[in-house]
Length: 335
Image 1 (tube, rainbow, N blue to C red):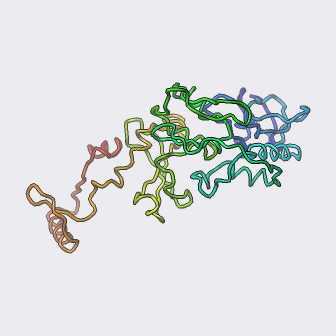
Image 2: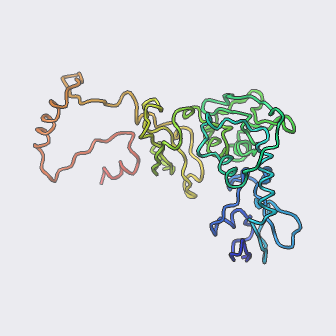
């Protein structure tokens, strides 16, 4: 395996590894927008520039494969100035939408600007205007002004789903993401384009304007929607529930698992959590009266339930099963 040095740290990686992945192995994060480990190399954003000894110009790390004896520097003065210039280029026509953008707080344009930008703007002309709030399908909304043309969404639809609904149209600073004529972004994995969009260009119509991400608590879980058992993150709003239409579970996100779902989840699983806070769930104590279910006060229900429970021994266990339980839970019930 090739041996190389990145920022003074020696390492050994498998042949064919690019420099972004090699640096990650030793805890060095090279900034990037267009690169994604599950997609083909595009080399469009140019933000992942690095210096390699004996190479006269900065190189893009995403499209540079490790070589024996390579010495890489990710924080030289030339690299930092180049990144700052590239950030300025990406932000030339970017709107000042941060206060109203759903991606605020987890936007890589914000994060990388604070780490690698912080320049004095030189742009005084009016910014290029493009379509805003364009529904691409039942789940995804496009704001073309916020798009940095990383092409992740286009490559996802071409290479992962194979449905090819999206493309980049026009030229120069008029280029924009859009649908091919007669198409709609409605494939079974369409919500994943929101996850891989590094900025606020693609937003989730179900989550849009519901709650700020810094009011979310995250828990790891498994999707119970089918037998695959996709790894997910459950994002819960506990502090400002009223801003999420009364919902506690405001969105589900995929959690990487190489052996199960990789980086993705299907739309059925992603948008299938409404039952958690559904109107059909019991909101108050109730008891059966013949064929009817009557709502009763807690003062009546607690003694009634206690009396029923006293009829069982301390070592007896009762469990209510439901089709919404995961396969693992239902398996344990049969043991």
